[in-house]
Length: 248
Image (cartoon, rainbow, N blue to C red; front, side, top):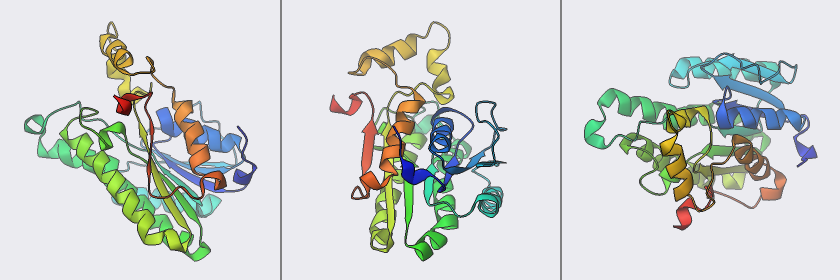
């Protein structure tokens, strides 16, 4: 899959150290883009150092640190024309009575508020150029219950609402915002499902109509399309990549 349009463009990816974010960063680099990669973990060996990559260690729940990381990336590689708000965290599938306030606030800060901070940091310059694309990370938990606990499900539903409003408010000014809703993706975030005898991972695969987990690269490939000019008329929507989970 080749998209020549990405050559020379700057892309910002949060959660870039592993899983879907890492696959997205690698994929855009392979297409000739420059990538501002942000994660609280150090740069992974899988993300090779290159002049097209600017890696910043920052916790997306730290507003000042995140804003500074974005500014440093822009200074190094220029304002991004594409943003992948991918950083996220699960909540252990805990119902509301098992969720304390600190956990609730951490999940909301990681999965939702970080997207607000990143968006507002880059949107003014995008508007000045009359072009910008956001691919925000939702989840099947943003569309149905059962994909997470109370905090995660609330956050992902809110991501979808935020994305729709973002697109509605700025589509006429050259901005396009959509979100992805992954189902069972084999990433470090879901490592607990594979622990021990992997009984939970097997159950999830059995419950998925496609009868398997997806790999992060499959989500990255969809990202490449959704961020491209081929998808220019796709606005304010949610694109599931879930092996048929939502079809049940």
